[in-house]
Structures are given as structure tokens and as C-alpha cells.
Amino acid sequence: MIDCSKKESVATITLCRSKAKNAIGTRMSAELKDIRTEIHRDKTVKVVVVTGEDQDIFCAGTDLEEFYAFENRAERIALFSVASIIDTFDCPTIAVINGDALGQGLELALACDLRMCSQNAALGMPQITAGEMPWDGGTQRLARLVGRAKALELILLGETIDAPEAHRIGLVHKVIPHDELMTVVMDLARKMAVKSPVSLAYAKEAIHKGMDLTLEQGLRLEADLYYLIHTTEDRTEGIKAFRDKRRPQFKGK
Image (cartoon, rainbow, N blue to C red):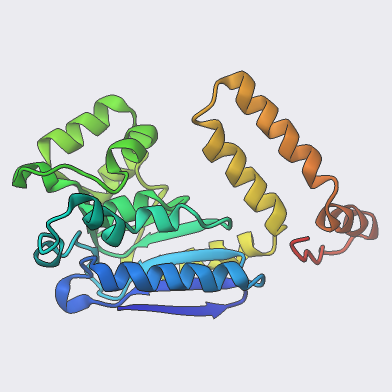
């Protein structure tokens, strides 16, 4: 269901259920939790990339047949949610939207820090057309990314948009020719991976948590994390490397 490989401090998580258009089921969610635990223990992983095995599909959403087999609604959410798993990674996460990202598939991508998109992809949350609504963080994360008005339009109409439109409204960061997508993303991930893991994690925390705080509280959080960085070995290494005119060797401590 899910494959995880590592190269040069970058872990790549691949959704491998192409016959079902990478639809999310309980097994996929459980495997993703196990992978998250492994990555948390592996201090050499500094960036996580999430993509789909199929050339045309990133993730088509939820495996509805399995989803509705669970009568208890709370149990469904607990067993099927994947966005909440992605959201708990301390290191930066990049969604490589290699194909269509629909419904919960788009919610999964929204939980990542960066979204890089194939020019061939379509994105949308069509749950409303089936009498449902986004439930894996879509209503909250989408509105925070593209604004209330555009989020209401996308969710209430349930229509899909193409990659250029997704980029125009700020839903994805870059639109890349399909054949170049993984090459561009892996270059970006490797550039990020040479940075201090502590700095990456603290900067990510400041932005994500700060969005739910007042400006004054957010500034205090930023200052606290900045002071903490100055107690780390990575900060000392950064200063030494600058003075010695060499590339720093960060250890995440």
C-alpha cells in the first residue's frame, strides 16, 4: 500500500495502490502511522516527500466502500485520517502532486508544508456532490491557504480546478512539467536537507502554531524559539562554519 525509501536524508513516501487510484483505506492509514514512527526515530531524515505511484493519480480520495463499512462515525475518522498523521512530522514535508488530487487526497496534500504539482493534475474537493463534506482537515487548511471566499467556492461547488488555477490561487507552490516533477522536487528537498534540522523544525512550528495565535502571541512564540536555537549545537556549528568559510555540518542537536 505504501512504500518508503530514503536517499541523502530525504524520505520518500509513495502511495502504492494504483488499481484503486491510491484511494485511502485503513491499511494505508495504519502503514503511514508506522512509517511516521520510523522516521521520527531516524534522525538522519530531514525532509519527507509524499507522492503517488500512478502517473496520473496522486490520490483520488477515500475508499468509500471500506469507509462506509464502519457504522461508527468517530471510528471512521480515527481509522481513515491521514492528514493528521502528516501534520505531526517535525521535519518539512513536500507533497508531489503527480496527478489528480481529489477529496481526501487533496486533504492529504494540504497537510504537507509545500505542494509541487504536475501540470497535468486536477485538484478538488467533490465531497459535496455526494451529500458529504471534507472531514480530514480540508475545510480548515484550505481556507487558511487560499482564503475564506475561494475555499467556500471550491468546497460548495465541488468542482475541480487545473494546476495553473491551483497555483494562481495559492493552493500549490509550483506547477512543473510532468516529466521533470520528481527531479525538481528532489533537488529542492536535498537543498533543504542540508539546513539545520532544528532551524527547519522551529521555523515550521513558529509559522504553523502562530497562525492560530494573535500577532502578539505569535511574536512571543517566534522569540522563544529563536532563543532556544541559540542553545543548540547546530547554532554553534553554523557560526564556526561561517568563520571558517566552509559548509556547516549540522547534526540536529
